[in-house]
Length: 230
Image 1 (cartoon, rainbow, N blue to C red):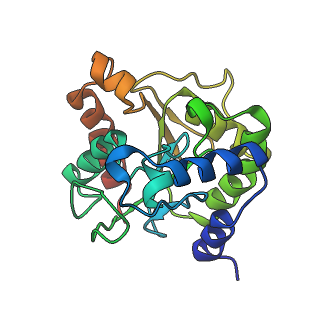
Image 2: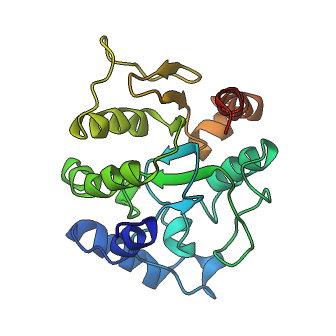
């Protein structure tokens, strides 16, 4: 029987992309100075959350010293600090901090995935790496049967979600939805797609993304879910 557990075990053992394997393993060996006492995960990072989730959050890829270190998506870096604080604020997480896999964090009604599961050099996966990882994204979408709202963190995640859905046989609206922070689209398959700027340091340090802007995304996601009901 297919399950998220089986899928996540497959993700964590994948060695399909030589460049990504070499990079994530090199980072795990050399480490960052403040993390010298850590044993880095150094493998592809599975999704995380509630299998019955109605909210699906899709990011780009693990951070070299975040998910690639801790083994949990959006854990151990500043982007994760923003994301889990917002999820906690709106009732999707039991705590606002995500520091390591044994920190007690649990998600309720939310699941987090990524378009690419290995930390890429310069945070830029290659086209063939997106293609290789899409099989995992496709299966994750199939297994998360209760999803009502997708929050895509960044244009790349937004566009790759739509591309993956087309490959799954879902026909997106015409004209094709365009990414923008706070843009919202009800898809023909009865899922609402919401675009958000990614909570990367490049966006948060420059003020392109503020906490009120980010909170508004998850407030809206919560409103939609509550409107649909159980």
